[in-house]
Every structure is written in structure tokens, then in C-alpha cells.
Image (cartoon, rainbow, N blue to C red; front, side, top):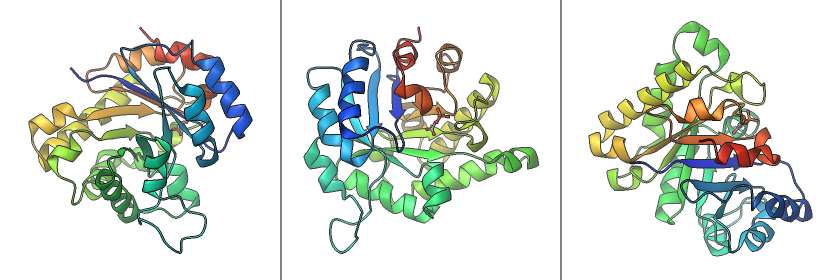
Length: 248
Ligand code: PGA
């Protein structure tokens, strides 16, 4: 049985002092040991958020990292910096990084490989645009994203990965995918992992749905056979996140 993983993606929100306040507010509301609860926060908030989350079930994650160990890469955060700070999870290849910061499937793959090398669990994002969905190429597109993201990743590593399926048209729009649409793609992703690796790896990997997840939509989404939790943007900044974590 896969343990559900419900992650907040704070994006570019919350100053360090606001981060501490939000962790303290949410701490009692997300106390659910049955699921993994992760707050992916801006780099500058990581250390104060970890401090504030001590003694709770909240794990702090990063929203991005670079694929090199160290060096002349002004403005970037290295995986060792994250590990040393106490981070376990890192979002890789969010559609906003792909759209605004020129991330490609190839850099996503380099980051995924590096994350595993350093013992971090990547939350690997994939998803189609509205045009791609209308053109009927959703699954072709996502299979390509997945196949490239997992190049040079072993089955053992892949089994511990988290994939976030986030239709781009559903992110921050209030337009949540239907339960059927979300389940169909998540099941397709699992089949793709089975093709790349084997059934055991596909059965172990955790696949989240993301895109306008709310307290209202979470219960039905998370009840689907292939949806193992969610990556939550807007609603992760509000007390509503507690309801999402306690969706049952
Ligand atoms: P949203 O964001 O929940 O605000 O749609 C999800 C995400 O981008 O991870």
C-alpha cells in the first residue's frame, strides 16, 4: 500500500518571518501521521521553516535546485546545501520553471539524477497544456516527459520517486481536472513506469495530482486508484491545507 504524500508548493510567497508564522498556524491542522506532509518552500525560508516545523510531522522540501555540486553558478542552490539544511524532497521541473526559466526535459533529467545521487527525493512534475489536451496528445507528451526525466535512473531509485501530474491549464486557474481525467493520466504514467522498469517499480512509485486542488476536490481525487496525493499551490498557504491533508 503506497503512503499518500500531500505537498504544498508555496511558489514565490512568504518571507522568512511569514513562513514561520504559517508553519506554526498549520502545524496542528496537518497533524496526520497516515500521510506524508511536505511543505516545499522558497530557498530562503527553508532553514526557518525547518526550525519551526521541529517536533511536528511536517517535512520541508525545496522548490528547485541546480544539477551541479558547486561552483560558479550565481544565484543557484546546490543539492548539498539542501541536504545540509535538512531537506528531503525537492520539486523538479515545475511547469512555471519550464515556462519562465527555460527548464527543459534534459535539465529536468540532470536534476533528477543529481537529486538521487545526493539522497533527495525528487517530486518530478509533468503535464500538458490546454492545446495539447485539445489536440489529443496529452499522453504522448507526458510519456515523453517521463521517459526523458528517468534517463539514467535505476529502478531502485525510481521506486522512491514522486511524480506530480499537473495539467498546466489547471494550475492556479481554479479549473481542476475532472477526477476521470486525473486518474486516466496518473494510471497512464504508472503504465509508462512499468514499461521503462517493471511492475514492482510502477506499483511503488507515488503519483500526485496537482492543479487547483482544494478541500472540496481532494477527497474524490485522492480516492482514485492511481492518485497517491497532491501537489497543492494556492490552497497550501491557507488553513484549508489542513482539510486537504485530512481529506478522509
Ligand atoms: P495550484 O498550484 O494548486 O495553485 O493550482 C499547483 C502547483 O502549481 O503545484
